[in-house]
Length: 350
Ligand code: TXA
Ligand code: MG
Image 1 (tube, rainbow, N blue to C red):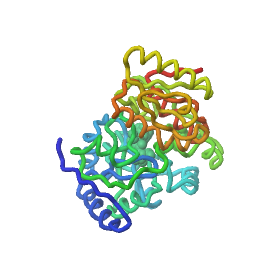
Image 2 (cartoon, rainbow, N blue to C red):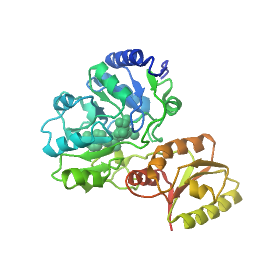
Image 3 (cartoon, rainbow, N blue to C red):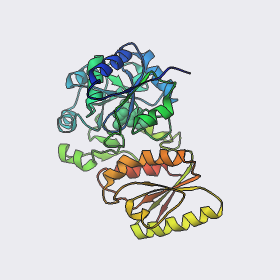
Image 4 (tube, helix red, strand yellow):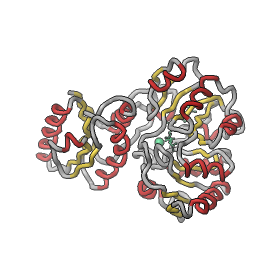
């Protein structure tokens, strides 16, 4: 597959023109990668099966893994979903536009390929001016998974998208680095008590405060192919760089000691070792390459850095990436640990 991928660097000056051109590509059944507040998405017309097929082909994504459908207004939701429960409306009021995907019973207007053959659809209204204008101007809901090759870390800037998908998609809108850095919270609203299928920036506590109760339906483990899961995406390998990844979890000083020992051990074997660590741990340990996760007490900084760090250290050809798990596991920290545990080949708990 070699397509001439057009890259549009969007600014205040060319905003309208870029949106017009890229929304036309969507209308004509093409694929456009675009920023959202969470990660970059690879978009196509959600109602056009031929267009949606191009997303699966470009990413190498398994056909049973459904796509999130992005909307620009609440009216689009009623066209796509049936029996929207009162609790879902309350969550939309509280958190949309924002990093929250709601799984709802879908209407037949949505092609099977978009939902992976399920009778539900994940809807999300992104909190990003470029994404919202693209959807509005295209005049159709946009199906968009994260714009990475399947299995690789999600892209948090346009360079990551180009690295993974150049020659495989029609266009990329370069809107700079994203704000949040981990994908949206996914909540299944079809159960009596809603279930969180993927943690994100909107926490379980945020959701509980809004609707009273919510269940946790995800695990941080890598799942094997035949385990029964509610969200098909959970069973696939995720966020895996080429290098081996070891996550060391515990208190700061013990984690730093354990990382020091791991570095010595792997240097002894002639391996190149990269570190993905908090500012605090970086003051204590050093290796061949280091990517900072920010202050360990502020998980939002880690959220913005984990995927970029894994990609950076992979490009530096590290054999091993050691990740600092002394980051605060609260709020978006829950999502950070979920992604890091899934990325890790080995987890050491101290
Ligand atoms: O922040 C995000 O959600 C980003 C941006 C681009 O919006 N999108 C994203 O999409 O992360 P993706 O495809 O990489 O992850 C979507 C997850 C997958 O694990 C998928 O299985 C699950 O949501 N999902 C989508 N539709 C579903 C459905 N109807 N039922 C259960 N899970 C669903
Ligand atoms: Mg993804």
